[in-house]
Length: 283
Image (cartoon, rainbow, N blue to C red; front, side, top):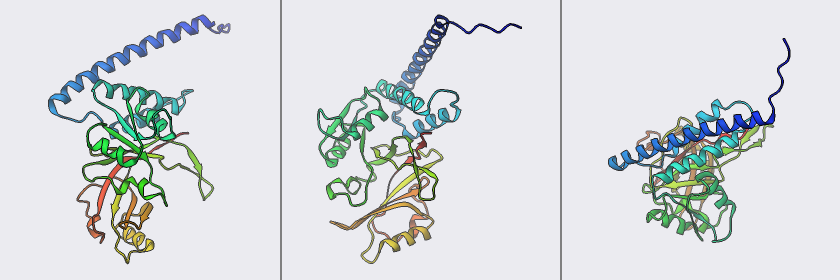
């Protein structure tokens, strides 16, 4: 049997055009379904922004991804599709820290996650960012991930009103792999968190953030011991001493109000600040 001749460039372009038309047809159909769902939500008063649902969609697509299509391309493409769906439902904007006319790394991160066309409102301080969210000026706030030794004015997690506001997502969703101490490779920690008035949804692989006020006699070692004994071993722990002692711990899994393990902790003002879907590896 003779070898089949390879297709010429014109044939390949024709096939790509056919696929583009099919993709466009499906995207238009998707937009019609979103419009129908949006109208139903308006009648029922349901939320339009569902970061847990978004994470489940992306995980499913990454799981089935094969061939030459890179994982970052899949996430970038569908993040723009999701952003378009949110825009259809009206009034969706994002607030973050930055200066007008300056594209900061945080602003770029927010745009990459929430779409290039989503309105991005910049404010000079974390306090102003949270205020714009609390007032309804923005639907979501994006602020840097908490760091050890950060300045008091940068520690937005100490100012966050709970349970009025919730941490609902981590950025970026696709985390690069970094060298670990044991010689292996682990996902890099989140660079920022998304905050919303909406409560987070469990996705099956989540992490929760717990804020509390340690007592004077609670050293760092004592806090870790208390959390471990309660079955809430922290992935990391931050502590600030002034103006009021306060600590933040990241816990594996999705913590909900009423979890019996929380009752075993002796910390006053114990609050779940939210939860987020565990990021997926970039590679």
